[in-house]
Length: 499
Image (cartoon, rainbow, N blue to C red; front, side):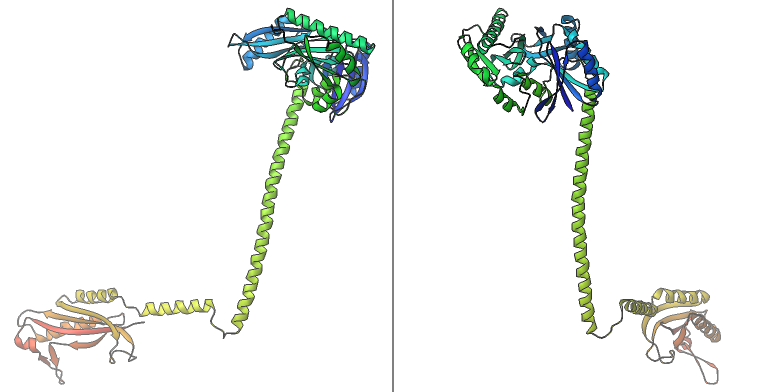
């Protein structure tokens, strides 16, 4: 709930602002009875946000120049200048007027406050003691730049309020001076004359301050008032050649600023009251200590807004992924349907063909065949190692040649005529001393042949000996023995079936 406390010299009006509409909540007198009633009223408005807007006479404005600073240094200088200018600086503000014209490192500031801040202190204390948060304290003069819009470099904005006349002097869109003059209700012509006199006094005061241009050009004057006062005000003010009058109806200004409705007894102050809630100025009179609760509330709102945005972003991200998951689910369902249809087509096609071994049976047959082929393979290493072992057992046998081969086994050495076997044909000789006994040579050859046939399935399939054995069992020397050679040469072929 947004509340606006409109303070005048005689009373305090509380209005509720919602959707650009102002509605009266309560009215309190400016005395102790009104303050007590105001405290009771605040007890029923826990959690509300209140903005105090003042329309009282006796505002003070003073221009100074400070060094061109930023951040904490500028804030410290402004606080010191405000404390020097206004001993009771509870309600004071420093308004920037831009760089000084002749000093590049200087800034013009307008120090503003109320002449008597004690009239607002009890009401601020009542707000501080309640659970209503204070958003700020404003004068209706602070809203004059928003009422003027983009106008000339210097102009006067005069707005007719229900309790008096607010006249503000603007320089380059910034407030330079303002005053409020209470005007009692009277006839239209008399009221217009009083308004004219009040604006004329403001112009004379600005002339003494040398704030007005030196040339004789007419000063732009913007007057905001109701339609009933237009004729008399235009007749009174247009006769003064010092001003270039521009009249703006209150209803048109309200539409321009987004004010949709207000109590009929309010004058142009309704514009400031609505702007205090919808578009408050950056500068205002309340101290940071008085606005601490509002600052915390605004931070909580910011955190809630950030959390809501984060939740919305996460929800949107999850929604996108959920949509993608639904699409993937549909695609998976379509692929499963296609796979089922393909399986059914394959089963129909397979039913038209004779049964064939399954893949598992084909794998078993392949492994069995590979093992059979591996068993029928004959690497020569084992055979050569077998021959080397026999030669070690017979040191008198010298190897001349060795031939290893794989082929059909000889009929005399194999159980199956067409079986494969690995065959080693060994050409060797027996190294013996001259005149050695032929029987010893024959015995050495027989011992070598026995070593070749020992184990591993090897069998002698052919032999060519240097000595012949007669049917009677006697030895008969061969060609080498007959020639008296020192070594007897012989050939022995051994074979071993594969598998």
